[in-house]
Length: 188
Image (cartoon, rainbow, N blue to C red; front, side):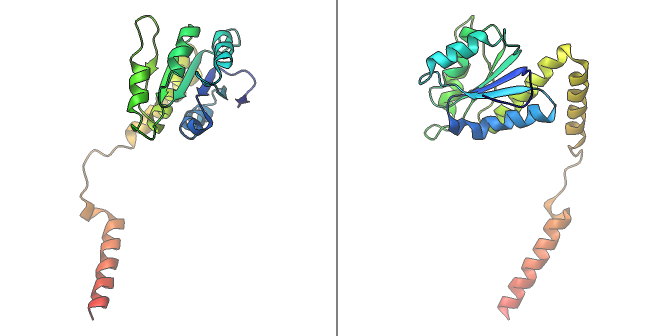
């Protein structure tokens, strides 16, 4: 089990090694906020005992939230939620055959009584799952709450108010001039 701190608050689990390319985004976000987490490969189908042990002991080990990413049949988030009362955030991992739609539907279509917070497919889902975890943890942690609010303000301030034509962007203008000169030289 990989951990960035002594006492993890968030567990990041995934169905296979190939899912780490997506789920590492969640780890990076949590790390940037200083949130202690652990990460582990837990397959609902290939390592069911590991899943049972992990999910059923998560709360007593001090975890507050579990982020579970899976592709294909994507039973990991739902099975995790069935085994713990902790909030489970499900991240559909993009699959080869259906671009993650199969995973999304599998995670979203949970029976009443076993909730899984389902995020977007792929990297955006992993990032948003971590941000949601930070937001939830911030309910009882003023420092995290302030950090998250400040992060949101920076995100908002980075959005332009007025649209800009491609013609007025300096880099694009320079590139167009350069390509016109190259075309003119070739014509001669």
